[in-house]
Length: 211
Image 1 (cartoon, rainbow, N blue to C red):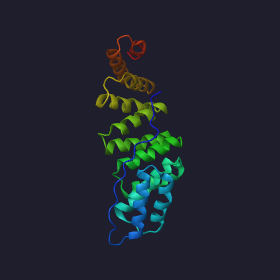
Image 2: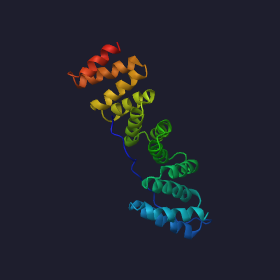
Image 3: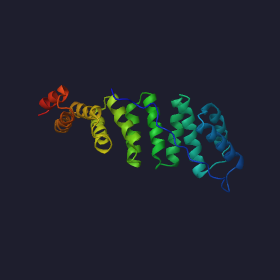
Image 4: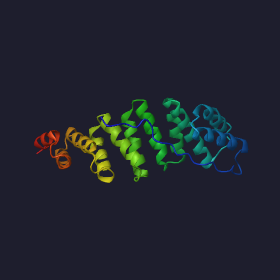
């Protein structure tokens, strides 16, 4: 089994000053909540961010930050059923943010919804193709959930772009392609594994099966 991340690292933006139509108090609450969250104190952050949202005094970027940050707080507190709606709202407000999809995907993993997790993680990779963590998480989730058609190319992509000598990932890709019925790609990856490890019996047997 591939090592699976328990969470994608959070990157929280700094707050913007209150806009003309925003409540200064709401932005101050949000700032305090995000500061607590950045310090790892999700329990303190949660009510502060909730107050800021419920005041209806936020808009634009600050409103997106509020929903994303509250989702992150719920996630850190192992309350993913509460986090998912907030990440969904964050995505509605800012559909180009890769981290929102990744965090919701992580919560879908936690709530045992791997198909939804893979869909979100694919979106994260598409939006931030240079992010190795997103690509690796997608590979691990798809492989561990036995979503073979997704795992084959996802794990191969990590090999090609980031870890060309990682035998575990090469084998995961080969196994997944084979399980999905793609013998040509499976054979290619088994041969890649054999090149990395000429003594690999798994590779030799895989090549024989997928001729």
